[in-house]
Length: 74
Image (cartoon, rainbow, N blue to C red):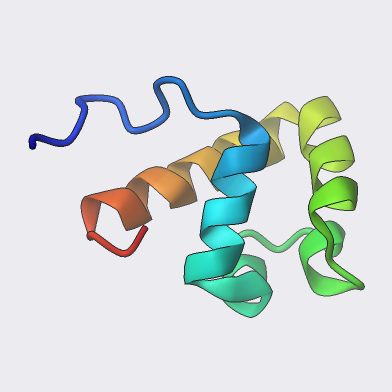
């Protein structure tokens, strides 16, 4: 089965975060995107709140997800 041309298609932000946490963990996410909700008591809930109101951070997380999908890591 071919990978979709856009890995974000049909993915919610919560699903993206959950996949990233499961496959690379909070530490690697914090190294890639240095935001407090990844470095201090990280949780899906706090991250969703921050990312939904911070477009630049959401874009970085989405780019991180696409990068890892393209590498076959997610």
